[in-house]
Image (cartoon, rainbow, N blue to C red):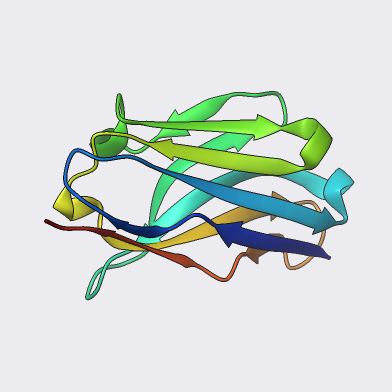
Length: 117
């Protein structure tokens, strides 16, 4: 099993920045990739950014150039630096881990990000 604890959300004005953190524990060796998804009210959950075990990253088109995902292997933690935030970035952000162990997908508890003036 993999446990994920996300943190760092909050209220920020448009144009501002936030950094989300996701600490993993448990069967760390089984993780192939970690990332962040988000879900806005009335919308489906969508991929924001992902980083693989070899450091390859991928981003949703809507956040390219504004968000950056990184990892601290020593701390088993993944970060999402969010810059130039827009109101449409408002959502609950969920940390995700893709694992070789069933049920293969593990989720953090979600952290609210609100971008508003």
